[in-house]
Length: 41
Length: 158
Length: 191
Image (cartoon, rainbow over all chains, first blue to last red; front, side, top):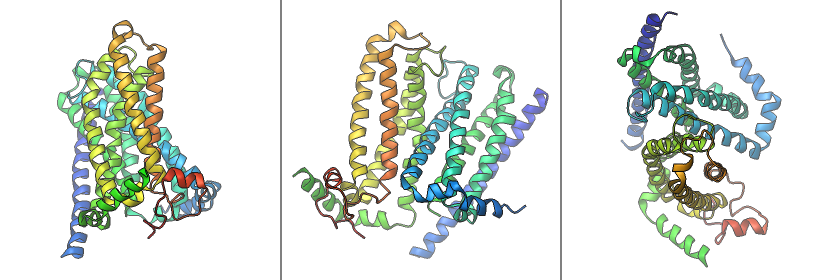
């Protein structure tokens, strides 16, 4: 891979990682909140 | 592709016989897993916080990346080996655990990210790389390894 | 005598409704415990880099004092988080922890690691001028660094084994184990 391609791939994959992580962890927090609601009302 | 057969095999393998029967052996292996977790975390944080210009700014970032990469690989290797042993003790439980698969997915992606993207790119002179690419790369790296570790811990609670 | 006092103190902590609530909570205990464990990556991670430098195994071209000075702050931040979450975890399960052989060894190792760190720091300050740029520091420094890694590893391991009930007081144990675990009330934390 040339350097400029590598840089683009890094840029795109890093952004994807951050978006996916935000999505995944907010899903987890949502699950937790739901359980807490069921438990404590 | 269904990998159930692999977990069924692991569940009855020699490894599982040892890890299930001897709590002490399991604890020692887990010790190596935890200590390498600390080492891996240290290497990731020092390297990535340097790329973000937060830590060790008086040392060149090439130097920091060079030195931390070696020990990262050592830590990762110990973690994977000890991890396979630990998973043999609860193979079937893990197969049906959502968090385990979240961890495996982020781990697989993390390994590809480090060895196919981060390392090849950081071989170039860091001054010639767009600073925003470096920052994003560092943030993504910290996020990936945090997710691997946190989802790993959460397996025990879920 | 000391064991009776410690148990009385633990029982007193146990009377706080907060302690029970925390222990029986759905997520709070797990979150605090996870924070405690994951902060290993910050505290022990930084310590690991510093000690590896003192052993001459990483950053050979960077002065040892630079590594120690630059990583001190993040390491201490990690340490502070670990200590605070550690106290909360003890507060949530005080009686069982007090009579836990692992918890006791852990506290002793923690104190030993603390003393080693202080001695190490003084020794380093007094002598960095002479070896700061050496790729491999002198033997006394390497011994201190090795000891530091070994003691902290011990703290991690005994911390993990607190969760195992192999040597809980209500079990049939050799007298020596009873003595080390400081069993006063055997059934104190039996579920």
